[in-house]
Image (cartoon, rainbow, N blue to C red; front, side, top):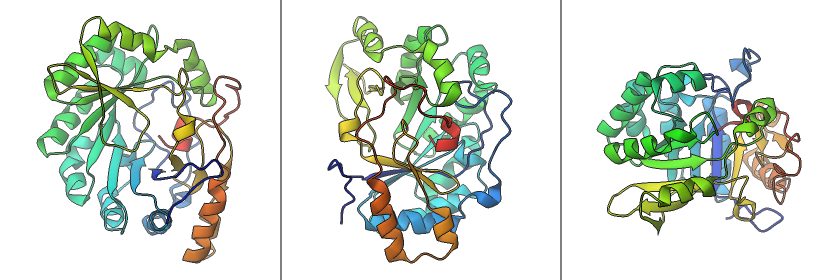
Length: 325
């Protein structure tokens, strides 16, 4: 079976938030002093999550990424990963994390069925890292090295590029990924919620970053397995692949293959749109599997043709940690 929206885009990828909480405070993601978290009783239980993911896989989704907030804040996350990895039709189970807790959980995650990870890391300068996140860089580095040691592969570093904040760290991050055999992906800032709109002042077109790198390195076209929207190049003579995720300068809406499920069971069809479908009330009223499949089919047709980050940057009220990474 396949899950196709009204614009004939096949949905193959679910980004699944397991918590809206995080142990870092990246200024472009979460408002300063924010305490309006959802109650854990309002989060979907592991069994409820399994039911929803099973419905998506019955409908043709093959890739699921566990996100947050910070997913490792959720207790017993490897147990959930093991439940999901056993579902028929799920070919790719991955994790996005800030890696502060990864050293403790890396082996258990790999053993539970997580095949690969993405790590949010905007700088390898300890002072800048603290300025951006209010956290400690050494915890992240320890987590990355442990993940590599236990065989998680590939490990992708996601770096949000911000003018005047970390744009002068690009080459340093390239060297860090070369030394450690990580993949590097650059991401443009997006105006999601008030925090994202404030960060829009730091926006940089990634084509300029690519042109800058091309003066120092020979960059050749490359491809990389994964369900996301990154466009890749490779540094000639090395194994390093660099991805560019450009939702603002060159959107990829016409090929969008993903939807997001929040920790509380809200299905969002687009980062740049407020359309949503609440699944939690239906799950807790005992909806049948067949009816759940039909609800998801209906919800997919709320997916807009494209986001309007450029035309209506004020449109999305919620911020990123509420939506799921």
